[in-house]
Length: 621
Image (cartoon, rainbow, N blue to C red; front, side, top):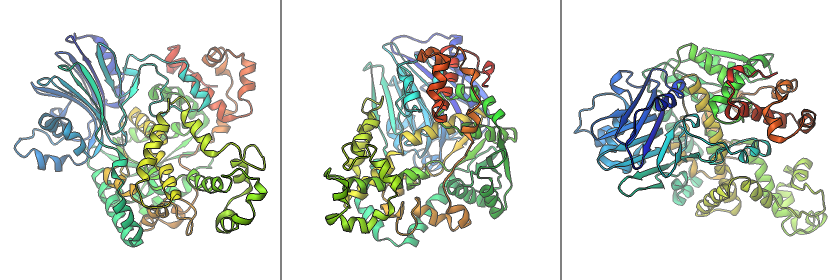
């Protein structure tokens, strides 16, 4: 919907300065329709608007009166219901959710936030109480970062608008891990406001405070979980259908043109199918020149729904041409190789006048859709086999015959080899140890604390240790991995002045998914892939050939694209960062194209954010 900027001075009034206009202008791509900066007392707020609801100037931001001021990014999907319930005594001047949010905060303060259902990030200043309220939606769909010093608090939708300081030590994670997720950022002084969290600052008390207003773990309820275990499959599908249909419809409210992203996978195809029954729209698909993508399935969905589908096919030239700009937009080294595909199809949608696009993000995390979820199930069972460190031959006999009959046939030689990297007859380095070590990587135990909290909540369910373990493992992906996907979707669509909406990530659907037994997510007896219940719903809308096929996403031939790239490393940032000669650098990444991609992403990031080169002058070849 827009870009927001705010800076609060703790002990002095703010003075107008072109720096604040410049910082807001850096967010212009997020909102090209209107830009305003307002100074009042000790606060400056800036806003760039992508007009979606009530496109009149009356709904422009910063939204203010003589008592308070608000900058808000996102959509509140239940704003009409909230207005009916709490604001009937007020004559609203617009039909926008911005005004409803503003009046709710005026009336209820922080207690209003938990009542919101939507995707949002906002900063609100009440000049009467001298309190700043900053908040972000439960799933972290809309971005929000801040820097707090002794003198001020600075807040923005994107890091580039903040007075950031890069940490070269943290940048090593680009080579070690290949991604920056959640609170692990390559900056010394920038903090991401986590989903479901609010930051408040009281000038009277001269202190700030972080608190949680919503958490997906709050939805876990053993009584609901037990009821779902005995509920009929058809009634569960009916219940899920009602939730998905209603939430897709709420995501279609717009005064601007909209469309759907359709990869041809089950999640985006289901969203496209339900949305297309409610409003006229086109589907958009990112393919690959020369084939090898998912175009065949996207075409199948288009024909099944009787809807037009618009393609954009990736080439190596398009890929590397857009790469520097997307690095600039992301404020991070590129993580997902298919980011550029999404950018190219979003660019085409923008040229066609589209301002809103719906997609299927979140379904894999909520319903257990990743292939590694099945691998984790195998690893857990292998861990039980090897638990006492006896020899492999001993463990494969006698007392474990029942275990083998019940499931060992599902394990391949590769599974066992992956689980036993030492290649020994007994296993001395457990999968649990490796997982704990990985979670510690540059995270100061943040991820381990999060996983512990998740496990603690799922332990309240009356079920087996195995089911608790797997439900915890599946939900853990709701954070780091989903966060990187939501970051990618937001930055790339907003780079093209398009608002991305994700109907699966609403409170009702999250609540439903959190109390589903494991066999309704991954049903090993019927189909050995994930999202079992969601796919049963999809059978009502899509061809089975689309539903029951391997997961792919927006594929790009990354290895083919990256193989000839060499020249950009000459006298580049990575040589400086690593202290390697060009020859040593090539030897370092030559055997692994994925490592080379990481180094290339770091090279472009370093040139833009550390050497301050103009991304338009960076040529990848």
